[in-house]
Structures are given as C-alpha cells and as structure tokens.
Image (cartoon, rainbow, N blue to C red; front, side, top):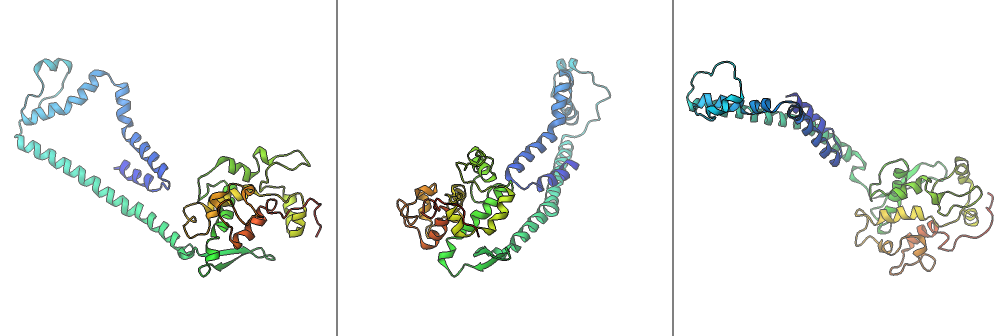
Length: 316
C-alpha cells in the first residue's frame, strides 16, 4: 500500500520524460530489492522451500499429490496439514484473493491519478493559459531612455511576423547564458562556452582582439556601452561580425517553430556565418534578403556588410 501510494507521488512529481523513465526503473528496483537480497543471501534449500511452500498448500487444499514422496527428504516441514477442503472451495478463495488484489490496485491507481496527477496537470495548464493567453504575435523593444521593454502587436504585419525569431534568439542567448538549455534548438556545448566567454577563441592576451566576437565583456566595459553611438561603434575596433549571435539567430529561425514555407526565412538555409552574405548583406547564394532582415543583418554582420571602419572610438 505505502509503496503504491508514495510511488505514485514520486512519479507524478517528475517533469521530464527521461527522468520519468529513470524514476520508473528506480521504483521497479525498490519493489524487487527484497527478492534480490533474499536470492543473494539465502541458501539453495531455503530458496527451494519458499518456492514450493504454496505447492504444498495447494496440495493439501486440492488433495492432488503434486510432489512425490522422494522429494520430501529435502525439507523438514513442521506442523500438520490442514483438513481436507473441497477443490471448488479452494479455487473460489484463490479467485476471491486475486479479485481483491486487482480491485485494490485499480482503486489506488485511480485515486493517485485524481489526487496527484490531475491537479498537477490542471495547474500546469492554468499557468500555460495565463502566459500571454496563447498570444505570441507580438514584438518588443527596449525603451532608449527607461530601458524597460515596450510591446506591440505583430498580427497585422507579415513583415514583422517572420522576424519574431529575431526576438526569440535574444531570449535564447539569455537562457544559455543563465545555464538553461535553449527552447528552439538542441543544446551545443561549444556555443554555450562562446556565449559565456570561456571558449579559447574568446580569449586573447591583454590589449589584443580575440579571434571570435563573443558576447561577454568586463563589467566596466559594459557600463560604457550606453555612451557609444552608432557612428562610434562602426569606427571602433569592436566593430566586427557577431558570428556567435548570428549562429544563435540562425538556429532559432531554422527551428520548427519559425521556419515555415511562407516565413521569408529561406536565406538562412544558405548561410552559416556572416561571411556567407553577398552584395553588402542584401542577398545570399540563392535568395535575396528582405529589407526588414537587411536592417537587422547589416548591424549584426557589420564587417561583412561594409559598415566598419579602421579608426579610433569616437567619443560621445
């Protein structure tokens, strides 16, 4: 009873499918651990006796000689054999015991579902329904002065709808930096190291520029970013192709949630890095880049798109 009750709660509290399978195997191990310990520690005669104890009982109830007299020498049976019981009555008792056991399991399985699993499902469904009320047709920007996000509906604009993966990719970068797995594509250890700035290609001796433009910097450098103008960025040595951020953008836009036949994201199939764009990032090998995406890509891949200049940082 306790194993069934607590086992249901143990499995009902498991979120991930892989963890559910693992916990099910663990529960099966707990259920059989006593038998495994008995088989490992008991003698052969004791194991044989316990396995045939019910045979002796059924022999007494049904009056059927299931074991020959020559086999009795392996055992020392204490007590006396119960009085004769008609065969039909014995089987009726066995059927009644089995029926009660099945009813017990069914009752507690239904009780566990109603009291443990269904409330959890209802709570998770309620949270899911409350999040944006299933409304994902929106976009947002950070206010240039207050810094808070500002939201706008995107349902009326097809140009904006197919750019939702741009905003989703920024969220994915934050998730990876916080140590979570991305939602729209499979986790990649190398990409996570680059976003965290610990990959060797993100490192360089003091004063030198690292091979890869990773989205990680010192806090003192970050505090100066709000003072940098667009012109100052293009004139600075930090004006480079942001290939790490572009890789996250590409993986997100090519995921099942966004890569639809009418999504306008076909050009992502032709590129892997910023260097794969042509004509100032206006086209790829097989597709043109829409104006909305061109405005985004040219700033993300500023070196390939011809915006960077070799000069000192322009002070603001």
